[in-house]
Image 1: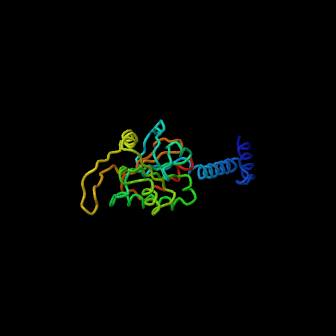
Image 2: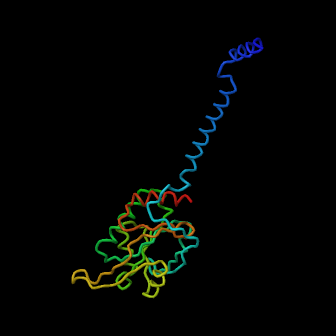
Image 3: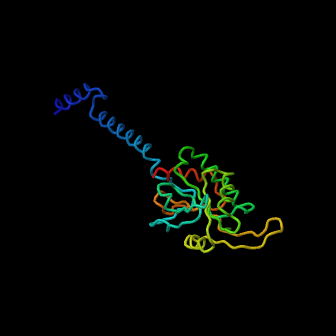
Length: 220
């Protein structure tokens, strides 16, 4: 028995570790691990963030299509933007603070996205159709980004769009200098390329935070 044991020990000592079965298995495991890590880095941008900066909405159906009046008095429908991520904002050009501040952040988000911004469309729908004509909207938005599109319509048209989306707005008197003002919901709604509502951004979200989310949505 001792002779058999001695022979086994001698045989084990004669095989270098780097040629052993244990070493080969360890090397295989390392290769698999590296391969999986590389694969994860490739697909990671398509998985979405671990946490969105906006409020995530689990919408199963696209937002109901609507048609309003856009630049140069031309009809523009929500469905026209299928294939792009759409950022919907409801505001008005005479807004003294919230609306211009939001437009600045949306502009910053587009600048951060760079070439990817071509897959994103910012749409501002006025809640002040009395003063916000298509021309007024176009000139206002051009100060922030010429790709931004402004839409308007009759009061009934706007109610038909805002009510299903839970957008509130109400006119009240301002000062002699400002004219009347409008209280309104200040969120930005984000629709994915299929038209589904995916995120809501509250007022105060930064362009960098929006861009961090958008870079995933444009890849879907």
